[in-house]
Length: 191
View 1 (cartoon, rainbow, N blue to C red):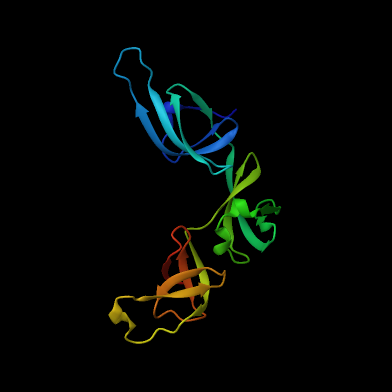
View 2: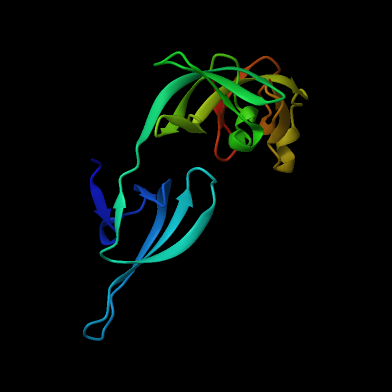
């Protein structure tokens, strides 16, 4: 039996189950009444991990939630097609298919064989967790000309192997690998 969590004990970044769906707590606000006999209320800003919807909901301090059956397992990216992306679970060797709606812009960073994390709820895959940084090869960029730094603009656009375009420093050439932040979609360093 999964242990129960009281609403008053929920903190930021915790996971809990509400109405048979897993949620991630984004923010907590506790309001304690000044009048005697008033109830302490807990206002949670929470994200549904199945639908990705974010909303606020207020609970009584004593309301109880189950701990969700969440697991994160390593998986390798196999390929993408019209149905979405295909991944191989590295523990069970099952193939999981994620549709375009579940992947979002993750395909912008995925290359064949790349290791990612698959988040599962009750044994079913629900999300892909990308690494913080990925290494991608530059497929096209203009050559940087000496003296371009005088204008103060020291970056240029570069198209990467997955098709996304990021701004890189002038010294980056075609064929080089660059490290890109998957959250901000920005150049970090040479790989």
